[in-house]
Length: 113
Length: 115
Image 1 (cartoon, chains in turn purple, blue):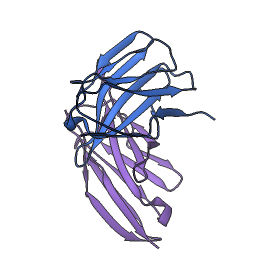
Image 2 (cartoon, each protein chain N blue to C red):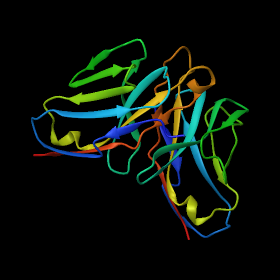
Image 3 (cartoon, chains in turn red, orange):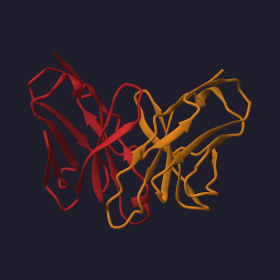
Image 4 (tube, each protein chain N blue to C red):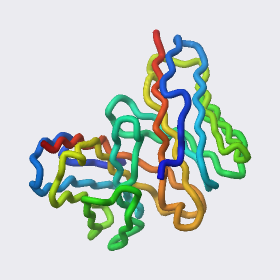
């Protein structure tokens, strides 16, 4: 039961540019999280936004959430080569579904130096 | 250092030969989970555990078993591995799920190949 779909699947930008990734999901959520994965390694939590929040910031990261459109976006400002990674959105639901974190398929970001 | 460890990191085995992938966390987390990652499919949850002796199926539990006898350990067992279980496996743990906060901490992954 795949929940999130990221768009684009792959993104290539130059260092210093901004990168925007989008995530769409299908059912009501409790919260939405973004994770980063460097090639073949474990995922690292970046930021969490609750269903009653619309925007959240953390350093160079800005996340928005539109529950009416069932979508979220992750903006990385002033990108660096070290930001090269795959980015995944993940959602949790309500009740028993809070125990499950359902991931999307990811966006592969390449930042060219 | 707070971390989730997995062993082995790489494993090549043959069809039908039982194997166990261990997972251990030192953060006293109650919640632990196993995922598999396949190209184009993202991460899919196999099993999860809310606490000791409490486990439940995720989205793709077929062919896997788990146990949670101690808080820190959550091994993944493949009784009779098949080639379609060739994948990258991740263990994760999380503090108690209260309200809506459940950031998960991931291990480094185990790359399994079943011939």
